[in-house]
Image (cartoon, rainbow, N blue to C red):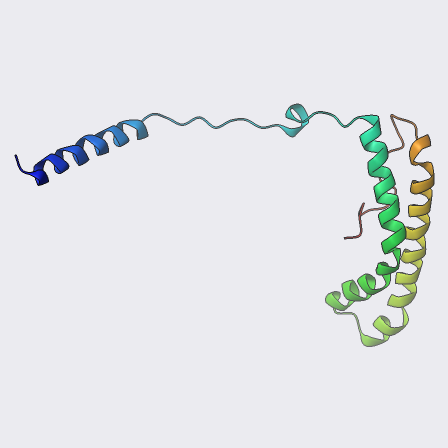
Length: 126
């Protein structure tokens, strides 16, 4: 036997083993985040509320340009973008900043069952 026939036999055996392995059905692992992930503790939810409040305080001002951009993408006219969008953005900025102050001050005193949900949607601006 020459060296080519030995390598050909080895290739045939290896491919046969690979094909035999392919015929075994694969089973996917089931994943349910409600069951598989641990529930956040009261401390984790409290710290999330504090972080959300600090984020809203620091980035509340960004509601003004984001409102302008959102209305620009909707195709609103220039008069609306110059006159109405800054007023709406300013009102949203005050609301988001005030909510951030509220969440930052009240994060350690919240009721463990109820008061950890976000007051505003979206929860974080960015």
